[in-house]
Image (cartoon, rainbow over all chains, first blue to last red; front, side):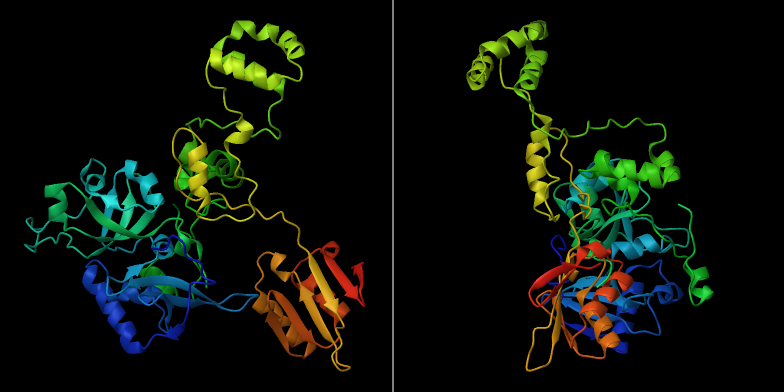
Length: 205
Length: 257
């Protein structure tokens, strides 16, 4: 999605995000990524300076926070993005900066790395082969008796690579994790944002 | 990776959510562990990492010996080199006969090669022609496709190394376009200065010269006659070397002394 993204030309309007919208963003993140708490979110979503929303095309929003600099005018750093009504996802730079942030994540097999770096989608075998990892499906229960949620279609995930420390890409599930395991065929995750793409390279607007 | 905590206004949030400064490769912009997937790994990323961050380099590649691509020759092969490569590939015993062959076929080299190709097979590739990617000015996503077609073997996706801008910084300050006794100072070429936004430059000018300043088509226009002042400002504030600045006064171009 961000393969050819140029912050100087592709970004159109910028509006300050209303407090109500900001709260909605936070609550969606808390909902979809059960390991995040409100305190953690508040640590990187600024409270004082409002989030700024940039529109890229009619359906793609980029949420940025303000950064002040010493000898140039303040810039905006993209931290979250949303395509249409899809999940609100962090940018890769944000994920790298806060390594303890626990978004819903999957790990892909090492062989998939070169393809993902070119922007290709993740195929089922990348997740089911040894080296790939996915959250377990709803059939299991953890120590407290709660169903461990699997991934549903439409969930946003952060994609890590086998053996690498830093996140590789951000994507949205096209199949539930149960389907991925059973069918093992076809596209499992659609890639929205990947390492080295246009959005990654524009760390300030 | 060691977490270096960034100085925050409230250390409290840092305790809840530690933040680290991430090391990104200067050449391809990715974390060093991913550099090996980029097309310029051996030529740009690896030497840079070894020089500037030896600890990370040791951690990632300490024991492994990475095959380094031989540096690209600066010229295409001469006929002699082509012949030598040819014979090396197919019939090494005949290498000694090369000087004689060259004499015999002087001026008719293409005939020689077409005969050889017919006899033995396709000519080995000249590394000069192999990755000819360093000559373009700006990196764009499209280049990756061309790259992959030419370089045989493992297809390298990922980010190409940023071409370090050794293109000359050239600033032309044109002045005194008279408009009804009022002067205008026009500065061309600020876009060749790295790390500088035209809007910021324009703002700085208007502050310093108490005049209105605007950006038009990559040139900056300031009201008033500020030839020398603008030149000084550019050299001081934006760290432009003096030799790159040229002043044009009444049709004559002088370099800044």
